Image 1 (tube, rainbow, N blue to C red):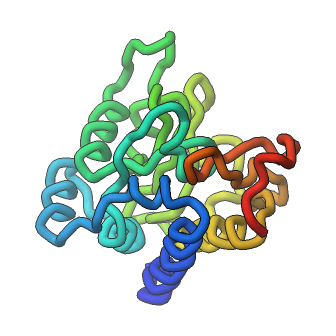
Image 2 (image 1 turned 90 degrees about the vertical axis):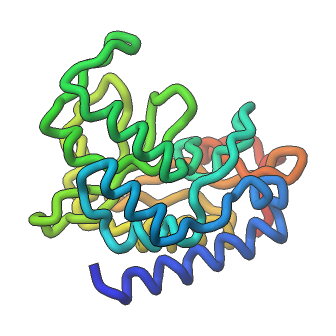
Length: 216
């Protein structure tokens, strides 16, 4: 990943932080300070992989967030919370089991070795990860998982292979600023930002009541 990608990621996060500070101070207060180099390297050692540059940049900005519960820590699309480095290490180990019990879900060991999960909901039902395969052009690119569905590296969305993390962050920033639904790489929409009482950012269906609309 080029330095341009990490710079664009940082610029997108600056826009997100500015929006949160103005319109969603409750969510802004949950964000943790960035991680230092020592903590990032410790997480790499614990997972046994080199983190993609954009994921390193992500954690230098914010090392996850405090978990409020009640859906009020769902900062990211698909109603997911940011994971700290410690949580990433824990969830990485969880996904790397060849099989596990949890609602009857079966994990695919080969596919799960691809994942570096950095966001998910509280019951591990869905989340976001980046490709950890250094030998692939998609190293550091984004995708999501949904429990009970295929665990292929890019389940059902082959066009997502060209979705770098910084492009996703830029799309989130634009959604917040424009009050519009998130546009997926295949052209479909997947939820939009809204404000909950207390100044918390939440993601709702694109056809949810307009009373939940965030600022435009």
